[in-house]
Picture 1 (cartoon, rainbow, N blue to C red):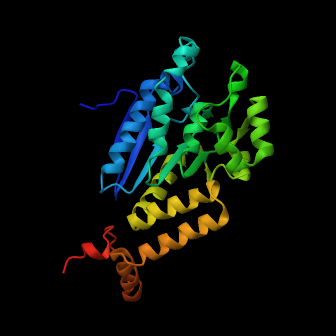
Picture 2: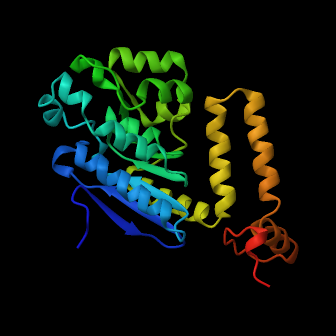
Picture 3: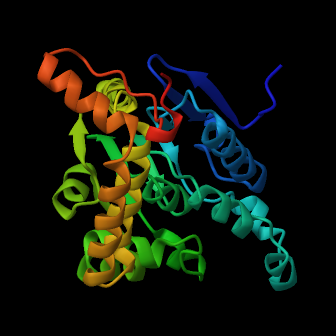
Length: 266
């Protein structure tokens, strides 16, 4: 029996996993228990050495249409202060493996903030992105004011946050929010293909590559360059580097295992 009620988790081929948001009757509105389940599933994936990439999706009508407003309406200021959701968001942020979001339909509010936690977003051309919290007298509370500026710039972020207006998948692609736009019926398929490509790469290099790219948003250039150099030198002493070079020279597919030189079996 599955430990989850608001999501489903499915193993894919070649070291990838699919997490599907599963509250279609409310367009996958993010209630507290759902966020906790997403965090728990990502933590389990983090610990599973066979998994190298995780895919997050909803359905063709909605990735997630926002927070569960009915649940929010029951919380006053004291209730929000004691809210468990900020801790769930922190747990989601701590996921170190590559995370892909396949988005169709509504991707709004907390749903958009969840998608922005992904490293890559693939969107069907029916997707709509927005931060409409201003219409409820509040602002984004799970990183929307920060991540959106970093990936789309101040002008578009201000427009979306202050007006509550949505943008299309094509507009999100042009702004750098989305990596690819497909037909709605192929967004998940394309995301699965990409997840399996990434899952075939060396796991230590994947983790450090993600860390270095994310540091570009948060650290001064010199600090980011120093992190990149240290990561590069560390990876030079791994079995995966040796395997990658040997496979290239032998013109055969590499077999990456994530082992350092000290773990090499003789």
